[in-house]
Image (cartoon, rainbow, N blue to C red; front, top):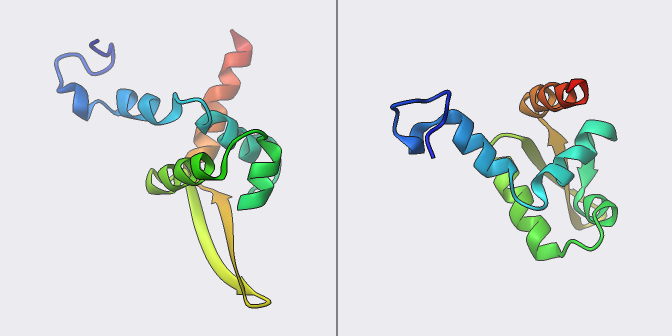
Length: 106
């Protein structure tokens, strides 16, 4: 289907389509919602706890995709000889939050 914004362009290069493809699966917006309404930083298990019944495998895949697409950053550190990871929202998440908040005006 041709995008109204990218008429005549290669669909693979359409910015709107590519962002919607990233955001449109079952868990991605639910993950980002945590960053919209709550803390700006989460540990893996904190996200998992909030999104029961998501599996560790699926959560790991979604977080990796969100980091690769610049929605989240991932910071690794060692605490008491255990590897820890903190995920933080980027400016892209803040922009997305503004866009999604417009839905309440519909």
